[in-house]
Image 1: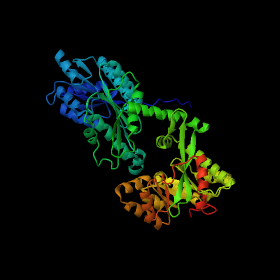
Image 2 (image 1 turned 90 degrees about the horizontal axis):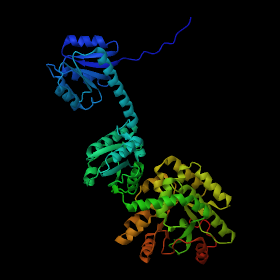
Image 3 (image 1 turned 90 degrees about the vertical axis):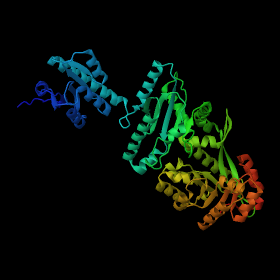
Image 4 (image 1 turned 180 degrees about the vertical axis):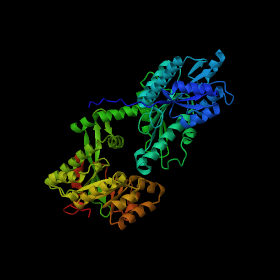
Length: 568
């Protein structure tokens, strides 16, 4: 028996007829029920109740104007006031044919106006056309807008802004972008649902509180952009009032502002510039707004030049490893050194590590640079051993990016073994901030290195991170007191914090190294407090390879015959 394919029947759309004449309601229901599900209301009040209960499913409303209880004009006014019903079209039906009534209905939001008696086919065709237009508009709206916040998506935000620039060349605009710091951590802490609710809340708050807003968009996961008419605003007070304190505890929002935008530029470029300003204050605890200016532009161009030249600089040998000696406070002997990278750029000259290291940590290039430094240190240690120098242990930095590699321990061990170097001659420096990622994996990597004979040094102790957490989770051999701790103690003539840090290290069977020591007063205080070693300009600045070897040879006489493992 042959079976025929049966097309699925499309569900009928639902319409609402608001008409106080019962006979007219029944006639309309009879005429339209073959094509629509018809809901009825006998006056404007009942119609509003039915609308509230069914607005998500209504395709159109047929509305009589002259009713005894809440007439059509009142119904339209109350519908508009509610706001959430705006997308539902209304066709007004009335025996009145005055132009004033028609205009009034259209002003109140009606989509069309039909005079009684009406032609059934004309009415049906107008209904289909209006419903079709509404569906098309709804589809376009879904394409244009972010489904979570209701703001325009990135593409349509840019298009809308460019259209506004072209249509209003005489107007001036400002652009504000905002970003939630460490949003991924907030998601881990509170869950995606609560964070999504906060994104909706933030979008709503900014949309309503920014004066003369023209258009707003969600241009990234937690990044919004708002274009508004140029004006001086009390930004500090305004931004402080955006988010209620208890809305999402721990949230920090950063803003970048571009004043009087150049409307000849693409919107993407303008957003990039506002975001450049925002980037300048990331990780600045008490600053939440940065305003774009030419200095920021120049700095960003400089950073871009560094990024574009970093690969070639590594290949061409423009990165150099320098060595800063560490000395024993008991006898002034050199007992180690820290490997530091220096960049001598062919165009820009010497570039401070504070300029390029944070940049490379963000783009991941620091991992390549670190491996280059580690190998150069291995080459130097091997060279000193081969020519008979009593080499000291040299510490190298391991960044957060490095520790994202689960095979890091094996790679470092293989590198050092390839140069036939004792593991005790290479120390691994980490900051407590590296434990921010997957702590278990980081602890496992560092434990592997420690068990293999590498000494682990905790760098930058006291610099502002949660150092105690690192002390309790990592196997550490040396605590390095940050330069800022020594400087503050010296300036305030109060070494209490330094003393407690040294006592803490001693209680955990760790040696201490004080960084940034420059004066006799600092050195003497650290010696009295029992600090083991110091590093800083008091003894020596960071030395090039060519200067480090003579320095090492010069200070051999103060040491034992071999420096191997002298730290312990």
